[in-house]
Image (cartoon, rainbow, N blue to C red; front, side):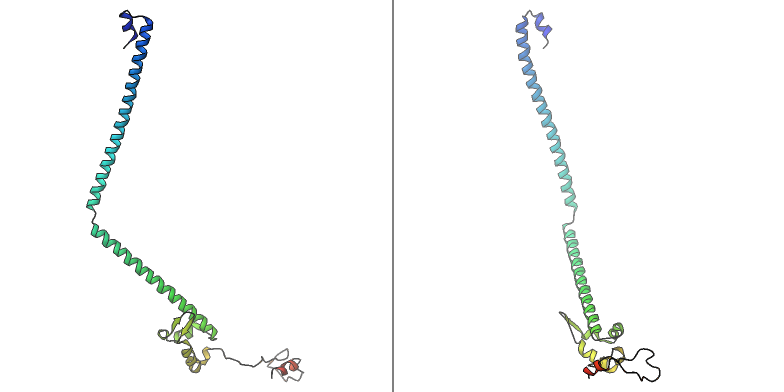
Length: 185
């Protein structure tokens, strides 16, 4: 409604102002309702789009082979178990090799690698920190191939010689360590 239309009808200005104010309220409320309706339409369109996406996802899920997925999951679980078992075996072998190397060094093997090659590793088992079956094999190797091990010198003090060429000439000088050496005999 326009103000000129009401003036043509011969209405007074104060009446026209009241009519226009009331008409403005009606128009504004209608605009608000129209905005709300547009907002609701947007929400409806958004919900329709979500429903469409869900329907597409359901169709995709229908295409998936559940039994195939279960088989794939089982296959992956078995692969993980195999990998875990292999890792445990490698760790156990590494621990065994380390313990064997330490034991060979403690047994004074000159070349631990060569001694290890002569051992029957199938009959040696690791029990915590102890190698079962190793002591007997080392004893036999020390008897048969003693050159592989350093000689064990029990209670013998080192031979002390006078300075100079220890292999040369007669040693006629007094040994300054003789008094100390007498303690060990």
